[in-house]
Length: 229
Ligand SMILES: Nc1ncnc2c1ncn2[C@@H]1O[C@H](COP(=O)(O)OP(=O)(O)O)[C@@H](O)[C@H]1O
Ligand SMILES: [Mg+2]
Image (cartoon, rainbow, N blue to C red; front, side, top):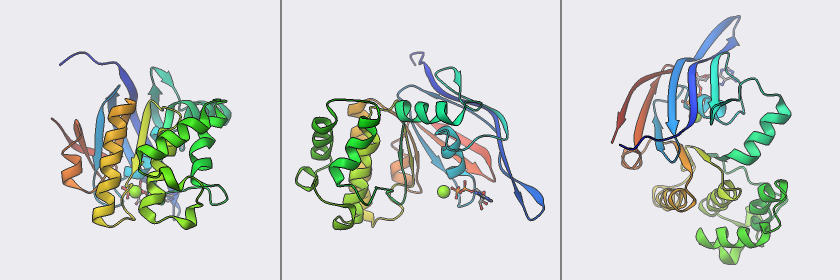
């Protein structure tokens, strides 16, 4: 295999939270290196720490121990402002619950992250992205006027809009029926390829996980085992 540049690295990452007077260990000494362009699936039972892991990768949460680096730069100690800037430039996030802004149209939701970066082509690219998720005619619709599957397709377009190096998706089909979820996952895989993003996807679907370059199995906050294609 060709030597690949590393995008993300976690070294001895732990996350503890106080609970009922004692400390609860949610993640424990996680070591993980993800290469540029890699597609990694994260699997594991409910409560095993998958969402916590993704939140740490996104800089939405901070590790209690260990270090997290993106392209060799530590992010775990950055100020909130620097973290927000890093996220804006580098990270796309797709949530189970879509998380579109209700007062904005589909197009405006997709434009927003590009406008925050000062991109003058935000409108054009938003329309291209909406077309690529099959919603060219729905740009003026508000989230409540869209089905769950359509909302998640808008959320995909929004996540890819700033051309993030790292796309994180936490059970993006968890609120969708099987057929709709399949469409969303196909779009996610297609956009990941065409946009050239590194993808970390939490999924319970073994067929989808099989498409990944690597599968990481979490249990009780630890990497239990991993498989590479
Ligand atoms: N803010 C929090 N406070 C207390 N416990 C939490 C918090 N966030 C997560 N947990 C606990 O940490 C464990 C892992 O949570 P999570 O990362 O959401 O797991 P998963 O996504 O795999 O279901 C669970 O037991 C959960 O209840
Ligand atoms: Mg979760």
